[in-house]
Image 1 (spheres, rainbow, N blue to C red):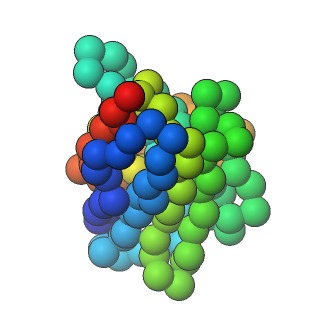
Image 2 (cartoon, rainbow, N blue to C red):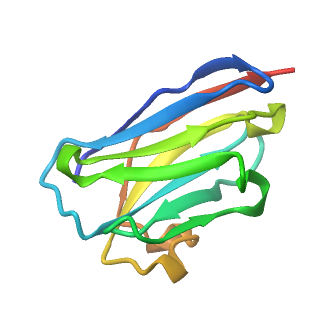
Length: 125
């Protein structure tokens, strides 16, 4: 598994971005996929996750109704559509893969085996 996150950038508050996480390595569609973020001076926190078949999703409360996670296993890619962005969403966003990780445990950072390099999202007020 080799994860490459992309799609970050600078956007005004209220705007949208779509992050992508592509697996260019030996891929297993049995991986649950998660997005985490780390703001300056803060610990990395869970944002969203999706089960390996895509039937189950999980979101942290602060992004519910604004962010949508999805996956296309044929393209080995997971997406995070971020709408109604707020300045407090500013962070480096990381994707991660957890082999056979159940969605009930997908908010726990230590449960993931593989991590991408991160993509910067900056939301201006």
